[in-house]
Every structure is written in C-alpha cells, then in structure tokens.
Image (cartoon, rainbow, N blue to C red; front, side, top):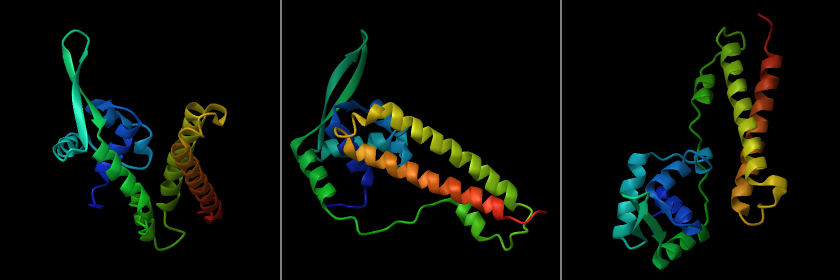
Length: 182
C-alpha cells in the first residue's frame, strides 16, 4: 500500500464521512483539516481524478440551481478498504514540524539580541490568537461535548491542538519574562 501520499487518505476519509464535491473537499482544508494538514486546490482535483481512475471513488453529476452541474464524489468499497488498511497500520515515524520561527530562533546567539523581544511578542500574539480560535472551534463543533462520542477522533485532535498551543503560549510568555531588561 502506498504510504507516501497522505492526501489520498484524507480525501478518502472525508468521503467516508459523507459524499462531497471537489469544492467541499477544498473547503475542508480551510477549516478542520487545515488545522493540522495543508493541501491546495491544485493538489485535490488531480488526486480525485487518480482515485477515481483507481476505483477508490466514483462520482455522480448533481445540479445546483437550474444549470450548474457539480460532481458529487462517493467512496467505493475498495476505497473504504484502502482507508481502513491505512488507519490500521502503525505510525512509527515522528516527523519534524516545519516551524520557521523555531528555525530562526535557533540562530539567535544571545538573550541580548535586539530582535528577540519582537520575535517572541509576534509569536505570542499569533499563538494566543490560534489558541482562542481552537477553543472557539471546540465549543462550536462540540457544544457541551455532546458530539465528542460521534466524531471522537476530531474531538481528540482539537484537544491535542489546544494543549499544544497552550504550551506554546505559556512557553513564549515565560521566555519573554525571563529576558534581561535592555
């Protein structure tokens, strides 16, 4: 089973939840999926075509309004089997995150660097905003945690992201407080 192309599994997973158009799939990357995985419109449509050629998805033409035709994609039985197999296989590789701020920080030589305070403050604001967004998503998607049992994986991912951002914000705050006064 090809393990390198994760986008195919994301698409199959989304279609396993419900039939979607290519536009709907693209929008999923602007919302929940986009919190932890990125894909562009230019990647999604060619992947849909490959999945259909391989027999993992199929589509039907639907009408939107009076004349606008849309392709509504459905996962096939073999697509469901491929998805199930992928989910069932272990995930032993830990991948490094590509965090440009952390990369830049690596090259700061001293805690007296005049760029450091501005860099840390910028990240503090960005991560604080991200944390607030994730907390709002949790409340919106899982009010009183009623839906957590139905979409438990999604619930866990939001909890994980909130924990990650909480740690990041606290780390930035502590680091800023420990900087020497210039």
